[in-house]
Length: 625
Image (cartoon, rainbow, N blue to C red; front, side, top):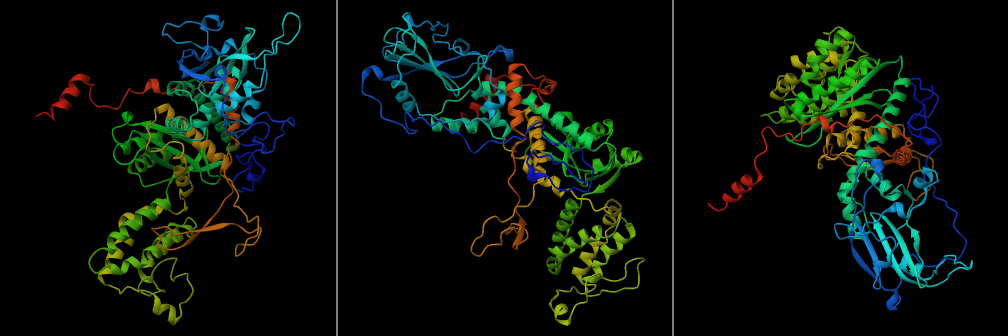
């Protein structure tokens, strides 16, 4: 059966026998998106170099930097958003003769992109796909000085007079150049980027690139400041987020959910679920609960809950789990099993509510083995129990093996697991038991047996280990472990999602949801990446065509292990989103996104906000007494 991968590049498609997928591209529509690396350049001689050049010493050509200006955003966004503007004019600038000069009440010039922009007829795709460059101002000035006036006079002749005045208007990353020639002709000579209405395309795309790549505005703004590049203000960026970027993310997430629903229609599903808090420690504000389909490893849905909606962080995870699962069931997903950690609240509602609906509850083996290891480590630290420490890796592996080899048989699972208390004493056959009467490993030689750190039966170490292995709680949990389900892939996704919503940065509810959608879309687009292969021969390296691995030394394992290397991730799914941002700006795209910020409390404080002056006075008085 062929799996139509979520990615859009050909090498991402591979066989998946778990489920029958429809024969269409899974995460994007239309042609394949990819930024070209080969370009056709103009063969005419270049006018100037890409590095800064010395300015001419002619006083008429010296350019001075003016003051900051503000401009209003397009009415398409239903509000005015002021951006940082700069106006650069010559020392002989005469504002009285400037037809574009409009006095402002704030004593600064207002630059309107509409005054100089033309109607954009190009496709939005070309704006996204074409290359962009960083231009030094000195190089731009050098180019302008090589140009003469191109205005056609009344006698049908071109003016060709030199420029005596140059004005640069900047709006974020956008800059336009207006000139005045010796004969008094005034016009806009050049714009650094196209505009849609009164909004520069580069400003919108740079904002989208920040969010869609998982970056943070303030870090990018600091980088731009260090580099000397103009950039939009934070108010403008967050306005773009609310009015353009978040709605487009929601549109593509809904498209992804419809494709998933069509692909999983009529198929019995086993879901893996896990919650992730937005910050470490006890300062949790959000809990994100995600469901992954086990066989295809795709994120099916998620839910974000704020701490004001529940009393504790544990209750937040339970609430998010319930909301998300109920939504999936309401959409006619045939969920037959769910694998989670041993969250007490989730165990209870699965037993009391969803068990009657035919949904089995499986414990995640990854979390359970992690919990078992902690108990074994604690047992090994008891007096005269240090011998247990050498057996901890083997015992945790034995738990995985017992679950994977029981074939859903609870009795076999229990007897395989409990046989470890005999194995560690060098006893490998026994008469008791219903289905399992001997260890499955090969018979040890005398030399191998002499190297094993066997534990003496009835010793303190043996009794402490048996107390953990044969505990009633663990024996009772076996009924939730016979299907061998684990959420390792979901843990990888949770780690990957931190690229988009770091635990060290605070986000609003809308920001948390949007960035989680971005993480889910990126994960689904790259979930079936193939393992990389060696492409070029190297001295002492692997043969060409062999699968690539790398050696790592995890601190907790204390030994070298090999990890597979996969092909690089693709961002092909992001480019249609960038195009849709411009389409939404032009009014060609509609959406149904409903922000949640308006329904959330202003803050999570448990008491009324006090008077600021009194609080500051109380704070300062502590240092005066």
